[in-house]
Image (cartoon, rainbow, N blue to C red; front, side):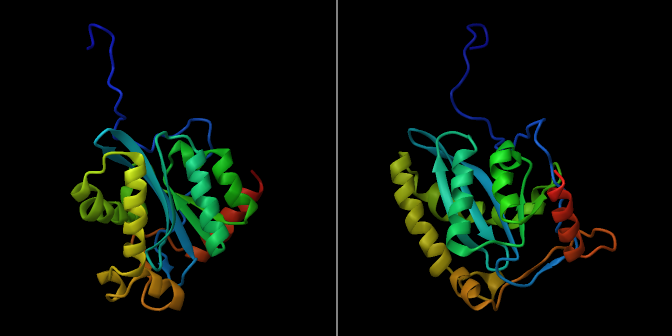
Amino acid sequence: MGILGLAGMAPGPNTSQPHTEHPVYPYLLRGGEVTRPNQVWSTDITYVRLAHGFAYLVAVIDWYARRVLAWRLSNTLEAGFCVDCLQEALRTHGRPEIFNTDQGSQFTSAVFTGVLLREGIAISMDGRGRALNNIFVERLWRSVKYEDIDLKGYASLPELLLGLTEYFAFYNGERPHQSLGYLTPDAVYRSGNGGGAKIVDRFGETTLGQRQTAAIEVASTT
């Protein structure tokens, strides 16, 4: 293939390539505690192999309740489907205090961060190479792939769409989570009891609230 100048059509494994001209915001969540719904949301993209092609899946998750607030599928890595997912989550569930992403070009783009800035949401971004900074979305990808995608081997994007619609309804409303005291994300999100998270990666002496305020002040000047 190299001699003939040919290249495969399958995507590479990295869905989080940064854009050199996009601003990167600091990670705000080291050493803090998530104590209520809509305090911290985050998002990420994962690659889904189909029998006949491939797709990308993005989701927005609430850190306190581990609830999937919105999700979208696409056959490209353009930022549009990520923005659509974010806007659906905001329209349906209000807005969080902090929104965390990786440094992928979709999330550092002006069209994506612009939505967050207009809503007055503090933007937090993972450090380079720090996959555990967004651990709750990583755990979601592990669950959805092990429990649904890998078992069913979807053949096409429409088939995947139908399957994930069923799976995320099950994940939010029926599947008990050990980390939530064997409650469901829906139950914890509605009641505000039984969830939470402690971020053990320390960040000096500043508190989560202090870093959030600083981030909003910085964002307002950019």
